[in-house]
Image 1 (tube, rainbow, N blue to C red):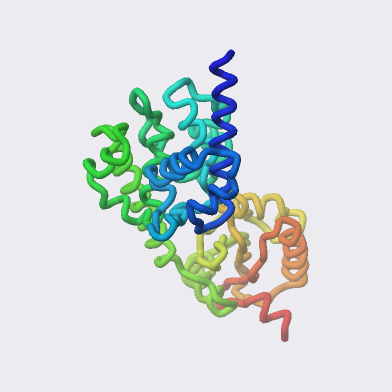
Image 2 (spheres, one colour):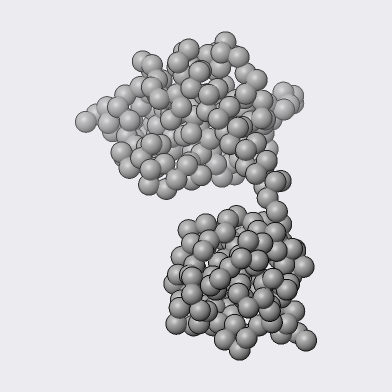
Length: 322
């Protein structure tokens, strides 16, 4: 019990110094000592130097008073985690299971994790005296001013930051970085190759090409949708119904289900007229209006309704403006 009580007192003393340092982006050692006047100056110096040693602080001036600047975003800095490491060292973590990196990732998603936590998951296991999370904190702090430099770090460099970075941990970090690079490259390439719909002319041109067979050879009315992303680039096309177009047949649930599945921001409605005449009927107009109202409810915009036929194509948006 005495040890636990002493730990609590030490934790509180460390916390006061860290809190004083966190008050400013840039501060002098003298200012922190003034804010913690009840503490021994040597103790304050030791705590600040501890933050500097882990790469959290950067010394920017030595004389006449040592001055420091935070190398990490103060809002992102986990003061409780740092304090735990100073007070409890390699003893059993005090962090609840639900707050550990892997559990948080499963519950909240990878985007919710700090860089140190993502690194801890890749490192997987620490070594006596240093946990995977502690190793992740050290590396995140070292590269806080330039995370883009991490892929170029050699194994020796990372091991000098944390002894937990053995061969396996180093390979896992580098593999994770490379996989991320490839995912980004593939995403960018896909977005560049996607056809974008800027308006009714683009919509009609796309539908004439993509639904050429339907326009020329369709013997029954078919209703399709084209799903679009936030930049109005084509994601996919989906057949909804086959048969005479009508509000009873084209139900909003069936229309918007694939759009929601594609995470579409907008859609184009498409159907054919087997008669060869692309002129919209009264039912075409009613169905368009009905689906536009449903789209508002689910926050998916209907960009246009294109009718394709042997004799041409018609944009409902342009038709209604005549």
